[in-house]
Image (tube, rainbow, N blue to C red):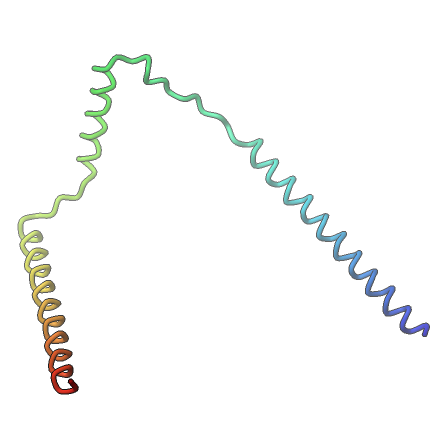
Length: 112
């Protein structure tokens, strides 16, 4: 009887200990997230509504121009190679699916 009580109390103790550790870890995680939110600095938002329509349009055009400068434009030789590869791939897949369709049609005629 005494052994059974010891086991029960040890189980209760283990459960209580696990709950305590879980609560401690939750508190630590909460403190970490609070510290992270404190470190964030709010940046002031630019108010474009005060600028004139022409100024906003010029800013937009400047952004478009800078994005076009970032684009990689392939050379003529590369473009020809890519086009040929694409056309060959399309022809190959077309023939592949056509053959599958023909094979299934033959199987249907032989069965039915």
